[in-house]
Amino acid sequence: MKKVFLFVCCLLLASSCRTQSQVATTKGKPKTVMVSWAASASSGVTRQYIYRGTASGAEDYNNPIAVVNGNTVISYHDMDPAITTKHTYCYTLKSYNGALSNPSNESCVRMP
Image 1 (cartoon, rainbow, N blue to C red):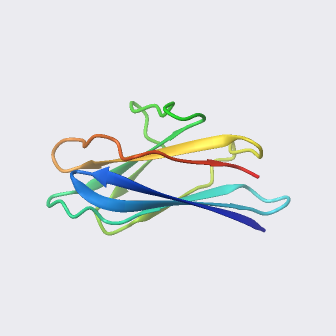
Image 2 (image 1 turned 90 degrees about the horizontal axis):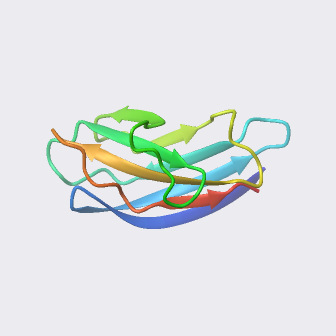
């Protein structure tokens, strides 16, 4: 199993957080990208929206790949079968507290 770690500081609803993307691959098994972040310090956050793109700045903000309810779950495992080796995947988050925040800083990783 290979693991690659990428740490990025981001801003969600004016609170500082850390986003970590972990890529884990196992020969013959599905590829997984784990995206994790610190809970937002902003009050009233009820959901976190996760977006993925195949290049920097290419996230589709009309179609999140996942919605995480609450502000206490701070990770998501992207096990989409479309994830392939030797391709780059970029992730951003948006928090919701009655309105969507601006996107977090982007975290990109190239699959080994």
